Image 1 (cartoon, rainbow, N blue to C red):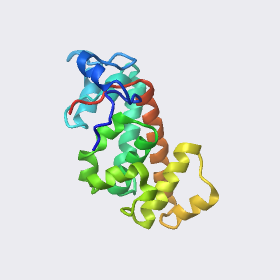
Image 2: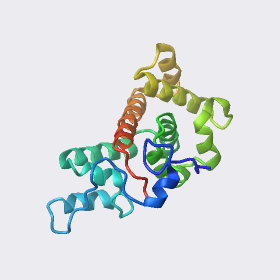
Image 3: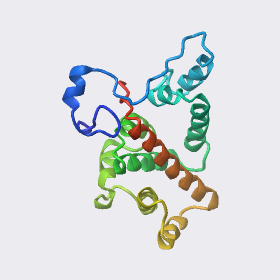
Image 4: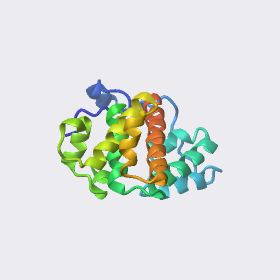
Amino acid sequence: MFACLPDRAGTWEERGAYEQRMLPLARVPFIDPEPQSELAPVAARFAGARRGKLINVYRALLNSPALAESWFDHINAVRWNTSLDGRLREIVIIRIAYLTKAAYVLKQHVPKLAAADGVNAAECAALADWQASTLFDKRERAVLAYTDAVTRDASAADALFAAVAEHFEAKALVDLTVLIATYNMHVRVVNTLALDLETD
């Protein structure tokens, strides 16, 4: 289903050439701290929250340790400490990844993270063109329209916001808007730095 994914974020061509070279493609060096280095505890904290692996986005961000730690805390708050359910969160993240051609994010979330929160393979694929799909309910479609607008236009018209507000109270509206904004930041970093996709 995702055979079209590139081998680094932001690039949708030259898969075969990369597979022949098997070289890192990121535009900044990946940092893998030595066990006794001052960054080792930070890297261990990041890895501990990501199934024991220091993933490439954090290996890149560790070039700027303070920002890496701030990013880690913010992303965790956005993903785990809001009023949004996991299915809705994954729908938003995957839709943003499609809109921005963020292969790194798609690879991270599809299929495992999405499936764990109740988004099946058919729904993941349908998010590439959700308007043509019947797999999403009224609430989810309102959220997807809102996600598209905020991602494409950095804003949302009054009517669109009102349609989303029919389904959420103020806290959840803030949670949703910050989720969308955060992953728009996320995809722009991983795409622009051309991060290599994770291998597992």
